[in-house]
Image 1 (tube, helix red, strand yellow):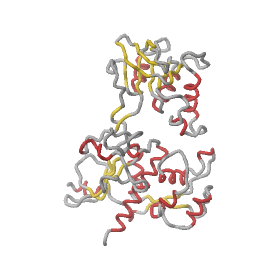
Image 2 (cartoon, rainbow, N blue to C red):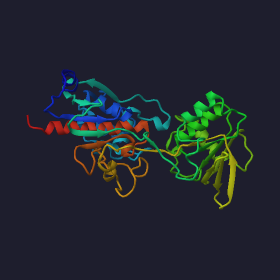
Image 3 (cartoon, helix red, strand yellow):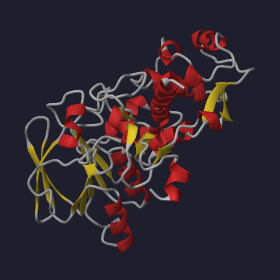
Image 4 (cartoon, helix red, strand yellow):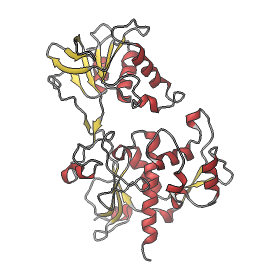
Length: 366
């Protein structure tokens, strides 16, 4: 290993690194920040609006959050995330966001270089005692698996619509753009298309009042634009009059196939078939992680190893307060790979991993 690598990674060719982080998204960056020695403490004069959490925080004044019992601190917290540590860190960073408040974070940060754990985000071969998967899920867009999905007017990324509008191949006078999906990517596409007065047909398989829709997990005051799309989805049936000109929704519709003449065949909830002419199609139904660098593409790490790995339905099975894989010691997963699909909550996973790694370091003999 070169001197540059030794200086920057704190390792020699015969000594494994303590941690390798794979990924450069929000989860990986947040964890790298924590492992670089930046340590969260509760401000001495801070008072958290959650009485139970405030009482627990006051029991350990001057002790870093990384060194406290995350299980104990997160007990009793509720919110828009299934991860207790993510809820805890979110509550410390944004104490009353869900209630429309503007209370400042109760945390302060100190740079303590002696607590830093050497790690790397560099693209070369390294050996390490611990590996953190933070690659997200943007590598492989999910597909419908229906006839015609490979036709040239069918795309799986919002950028295709941006290119078409810039090139003038999709205009307000064109046939509608079909947007498939009921998540935030599909909502972004709806907002983008309507900004340019592009006609939109928005199709999705779930009912609009399904509590599992992502819109029901977002505070309205923080995300009014997404809740506007949700309102449009509820009110703008393809068969009803539209106060939102240029947009129609197709709830609970199953897409059967695409035709070469730019038509899409649907089946409605009653089993009837409908055909629509289109200018362009965006299939935005999520994405799958690409873990092809792991044995079996990491399938054995999932909650259900017999099903495909999926950030929403079948993430990597991790311990809730360390984010370490239940199947492989020393292997961690954060962000969507561990089921945390909102940027707002990925910091909690980074906190859990950093706390776990620091405890491992503390247990090592001098």
